[in-house]
Image (tube, rainbow, N blue to C red; front, side, top):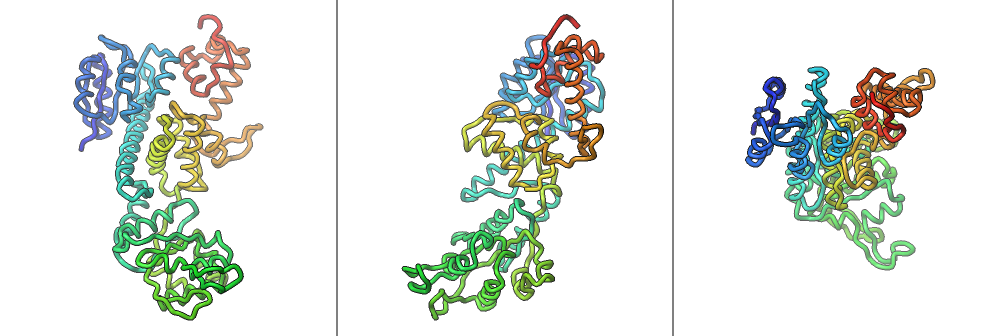
Length: 464
């Protein structure tokens, strides 16, 4: 279905300009010259983008945005105004306004950039909604989220391999979703109605892992007070997922090789041979071929496990998925904890997209969860994420006592923050004086101060 934008403005020239810009982004554009007409149009359909002027012939555009309840209805709205009241604008952003633009527009490039970011956020919201609906059908488990080329390739491979009963090796860094891939393989196989058993080989000692896998007879060792089936038996008819297989000891590697080759095993302390009717899926965050060269992993076992090898891409290779993932996690966690955090503001999305994410998707989810826990209501800005995201980004050389980030967006943000601090110090906290010293209109300076939450550090002072 074609994406649509609604422009609410009574100025013909502004409408013509905005129509041209949104149509260049592939959207159909409709125009409403007043609030009443805008109400009629929004009652009929959902728009992917709303560009709303503040002062309209029959009402206030900001009130109209609030009336739409964009945060709950998941609509992306941008307010345009030549009469900005910073307190109203910031309040509206907390209630779900995506961004606001001051008239006259400073530059066409800046206007286009806001529209692109707003549309990217709408895409993220739509994808997150689609994934939430899909996940609801997958027996309570999460799903892989993302439409980047690496993820499309991975999902295609999963769809091809899942119906087969072949052994699969999943390679990828920690936090990239290897267990989710294993669950999808199980869910798409003829074994899906049978158990899925997940075992972390790196979390158990050699003795505990051996007894957990093979099971044991009563009296097989000290403390074995009763006969206990192992995971090889528990996974009968289903899928056995061995995570962090590289941490398995050489002795257990040899024992696993025999089970894979012969498809049978014995409980510890028993001579009875049992058939192993399970599909084996293994995962590792270390390249096994490199461990084979270092004689830390059996080469014959590697060939048995890697009949099919899938790779989960790190988050740095799929940055176009970050907005979708963040929106998905935000929605999921809001529902889980009964919160109304969000939406993510443009600067927050930029901060997320430029972070390094050494912990990959798992780290991203934890950052969103932390923000939801600490800020249960209202928009999430870059400063809300800074303590958890900013310090993880790449740092460049230290110039004059200021450690300049390599990332352009963060460098620009840090420079403006530092400049505002110095400006307020020079003006002794008087915002009007600071505006005169900087050459900025007081309203523009207020906007920047609010962006970095420094307005409380000064006082309004006299007229500009």
